[in-house]
Length: 226
Image (cartoon, rainbow, N blue to C red; front, side, top):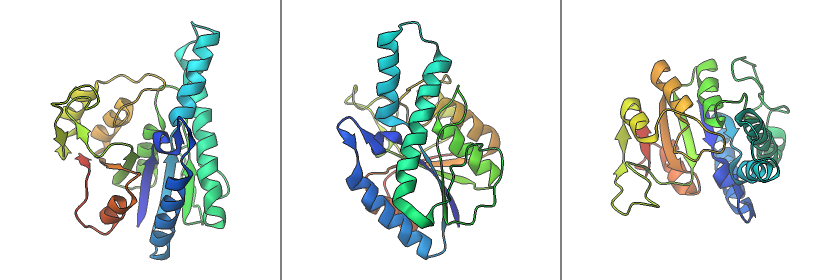
């Protein structure tokens, strides 16, 4: 089976540096799934690295435009994607998938991608790849256990959501993208999924056992957006 994973940069690139402990566990699980015949397209976000570069650019030039901010974020995703790809060695396709709208018959069991064009995030690349390679489900690995009806870091009464449709999800997160935006799933990508009947499973990527449970069709923590 082919899985499309949107690996949040917030897991890979932390404030204190690279999350190598997670990457080792993640690699081990993906290798185990590959041994069972699965294939993966993994899109890696920019995370803290992207936000640091955008913040630094604004400190140097306050009126830097959003397109330039987006490009800083995109190149941060390339660096993160290359890092994760390097950990998989010969199992990984040599080059990143740079254009999500062009299908490449890659022979390796795992291929990597980062951002693509200004105006959206690596989440949009993931859903575009899902359409190109005819995968119906995208697994979004972030640093949250569930999608909530409001920001749980600000509102103690925030309620977790296990299932939600795209219309209601977009009412929660809004419909506009901004560079460095932190949201459970990119609004532009969400509208694309709504239009193309794609399902997204939001999981806490750092909980490797939980991700394994999803692969095994066992009970798991997470939100299904459809």
